[in-house]
Image (tube, rainbow, N blue to C red; front, side):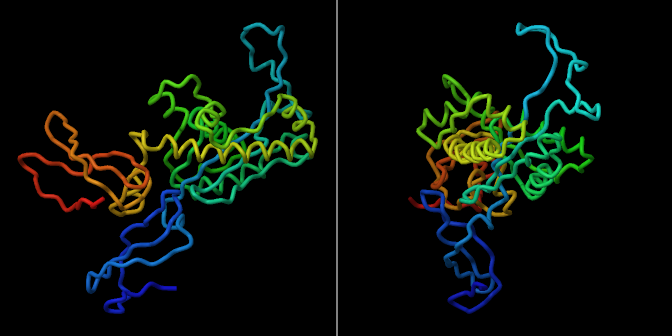
Length: 311
């Protein structure tokens, strides 16, 4: 149903941001009427449709099968890779993936069938996650830049698939290592440390059973994968206020909102950030509590079109 201005009944409206509750669930859409400048709110039920497409994901791959001379540290040549029955060097492949859109309760997933895993054929599974990557504006994973994204790209090009449309990447492992001195930076440790949704316990035998085509164990693998993504979202939200180079959601939404979470409610603080040439006022988002610079102020520039929101 189309929104209508309560003052002049006009339908020429402009969105002014989404107001979120403390649990990050959307309550209302804010509007301004272009004709009479009246500002008003309407309730909405699908907040993520107005946000950039932010995808949290995790993949599971098969272990590599190689010939070795011993268990000690040694160089292993690519010639030691165990080939499949057709002589191809399919040393590893994607077993499963799980993903969810930020704030959405639905966790999506896909996993190879027993027949596909015996043939080491992950093309169908890759096509399904490729579609999500092609939709996403931002993708989030733990160790995603070094492992998950590069692994998927290796399989995409192997199957002669085009690269998905460009997206920004957020790697929660990189953030944890850069900003904090935790005892460990593994997702399993972070979820336990902060009492979040923890990873399911597994053993290496699970991967062996999966590559042998055991359907029951494949079902267990995809459940393990899905659980990882739920914990990943909580880790991301926990670390988000400390992400200094977070992709700017205001640019993606083309709106004057918090660059980290998309909330419009911003408080001007008394703090200033100084560079060699300028002084910047520091703002803080009421939703995600992220501090950031909004407005330049020096001898040559003192006027601003940004307003401070009262607490």
